[in-house]
Length: 275
Figure (cartoon, one colour):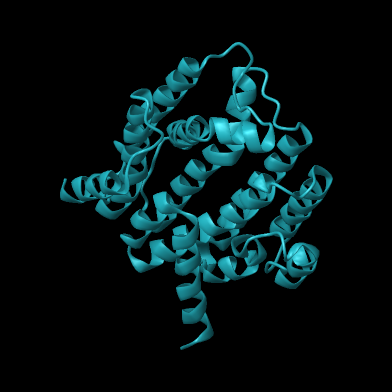
């Protein structure tokens, strides 16, 4: 097996280990898109795991994220050796997905590598700013800013990838809303855990849980509108699956459940594939 084939196989394995929501739709994509989206997801997850880490202190997180941002923004090939040197002192704490950022970029097709790097860099920089703010969200504008960096950017990157792949044009504001909607569902699902374990409450002052449900619904509707511009079946499937899972999860939480079951996930995936 060639080194590239080995890396691709390992990337798919780590992807499966880190994301129940995105692994399934990524496997339905054709090879070029599968490698591109898989690489992009793993790169963004790499920086997200630094931001979210439960034991690494805030000063260290900010330094790691800002240094990663600089390495990603630099011209020429990504300096994987410099990144390894940066994260080496934290090998025991950081997960594999964060330690192997250079490998995930190796998997990405050369023609779109720069785009993936730029968006991941912007995410790392935005996350560093939010670590410095201790994730304190006062207003809806704060929530919009936070969800832009951790999820709206994913929507924008996807839009750029679709255009590069086959010329598909999508609305960029709706792309941001799509990402925000998925993130809002995560905020609701993890609300008690985030507060208990990290002392973080991603909810504006004066908002009730119902207000967050409204925020999630509004943005998921943006996600549904986003899909109307997509006519490539595999891309449509990729977007529909996480969107439907989020909508069903939101409904389950409104009914007092914590999440949807594995069987329900399988049913939703089958429904989307049959459409």
